[in-house]
Structures are given as structure tokens and as C-alpha cells.
Image (cartoon, rainbow, N blue to C red; front, side, top):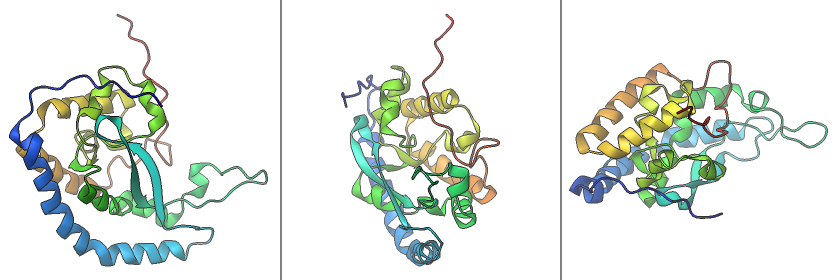
Length: 219
């Protein structure tokens, strides 16, 4: 896969270069330790689900400067297939337990390990699929100028209920304004969004619709 050209960002601050990583470790480590019992219980319940082959979801995602890393989540869908061996649609493979884990964002807890590894940050643009990389406009590609995050400005402003173009505008807005105060604000607002289960999926969709590229500008 050809390297993605990430346009330059504004001059870096001390927080962007050092402080952000310190905040990530200071929050992610105790949070991971505190939630281990919850993770263990969720993993056990998933393992008991019919048709569940694995409790941990692993997938390559592009991170800082589009470098690939392995993302970890709880597996919320089964491997159920049709008579031809093809995976069934997401809506049919998403179990009741999986839907609840997504609504509460508990399926995201394994990503705290990604934070500790330095793959992602607590706050940043969500890590998407590698096949989206060639579809980004130069402006949208700027989302890869910072580490991706578990939560971000787009997540507290609609999550999956807004368009891809709007998500990317929010991502770039964040990239241009990274600061300690903004990250604390996003983390605080995320707690409220998670408790309210806002924007888990687009209206009428079980999961997020794939990005097919932005429509050409009429200008």
C-alpha cells in the first residue's frame, strides 16, 4: 500500500509533543486495571454465546502518519455464514450482548492496551480502515497528523449518526487545536455520551456504513 501523504500541521506545542502521552499513560493504566473484572466478565459472556469463535477482535488500522498497527476490541459479532460460506450481514451477526457492549462502549476497553503501547491516544480521530486511505482528500488526510484516539471531537458531536464528511471536518478541527484543556473537555463529554448511548450507529443501520469517498466539490 503506498504511503499516505499527510499535509503538515501547525507548529507543535509542548503538550502535543510530550504532555499528551503523559496524560494517556496516567489515565489508561489505572483505568485498565480497574476495568479488568468488567473485561473478564464480558469476555466470559461472549465466549458462552452460540457461534462465537473469539472474544477478542483484532484488525489492522492506520495510526500516526498512517502507519498500520493492530487494534483490539471485544468481538461483538459472530462468524455466522450463509449456505455459500459468506458472512451474514452485520445486523444478523450482531448479538443482543454485542449490541449492548457497543451501546455502552465496553467493547472499546481493550483499546486501553493500544493506548499504553503508544498506538493510539485517549483523544484523537478514530482509527478507521486501511482501505479508506486512498479515498481521503488532502484535507481529510490531515486526521493522520496526530495519533488516533478512543474518543474524539467527532465522537462527542454525533459519533456514527453524522456523515463521513462532517466527521472528517471535526477530526481536522481537532488536529489544528490539540490542547490539554480540549482533551479534558472531550473526555468529560465522552462520559455523558457513553451513558446516554448517543450516536452508536447511523439511523436504520446496525453498524457504521462504509466510507466510499467524498463527492467532488461543485466549486
